[in-house]
Length: 439
Image (cartoon, rainbow, N blue to C red):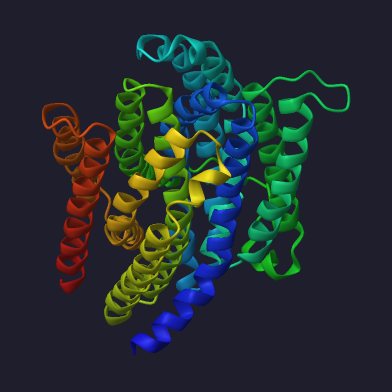
């Protein structure tokens, strides 16, 4: 029974994983190329990215409401409803994108109050503001991507994301270093590259989905028949708690970056390297979580309680196995991996030590991610939102602060706190899914 579910989950997850890694690789390319400018530039990118992620994940959470609703409609053979969900979701997501862009432009100024090194404050503010303008193309892309996931049309988003990496690297090369007659903008150039690559992604995926013959029956067009306020409320009812879930988790990591920033630019650069490497395996977990959402929602649309449970738990087991393997890789190659980012020996040594802690929280990180995904698949949102708030802000972050400053563990104490929070979240998510699906 589990063998079939493993196979179906893997087939769904693979293009989503490649797409997720493709998105992350743009961030990795930015960090590697900015790192060549210097430690200060990398630290500015670290704090700017950390704060922007708070805004971006809210957009991700809101947009992801499209996937379970579309997957349920597809599972119940209500094909034209899928197009209706897409069109109403576009309204919700684009309006959210405008609001989040404004929040980013204004919120970037808050960097001045976080007691960061003076040399990184202005570049970090400008970098974050440039990233803010990318929210609109990002939300457009997310709308069509989440629709495509709901109807299991996965490969185009994967291919487009990989092509966007080439756009990102090319524009980085031009504007970070000042090639082809362009000014050398350093970290600001990386922000411009992100904007152009996300615009490319949005327009490309929109065109592919609206012209694909296999999707005609879903009517993924912009032909609005009405503004469905009730459906938009349903999207927000799922999306807003989803946004809060991501916000609570990412804000804990952002707060950890701010705390580490008090320890100096070298500690902050090491923190960014370790977090960036941990994000690679987490993108695989996100892909499996997305596949879990789709499969659980399809089973719910078919009214198959048994398949809901089996699809959910098989996704968790699959992810736990992968994350355990990635943890072993981080331990074995902890000395060499940080060297891809910077040549500063103090930074690479610190990052290598952090990767040992990263290795230990891999299973917890993957399990809590898939747990959120499968709970979203059954549209269970409120309690998981409270779980994320408790795990990260009541348990994890305070533990990290105490270990860092009261037990003199420094940056390592902050990461031990993250490990504690992720483990608490994983255990509570699994308990919640088990209880809900037994009913």
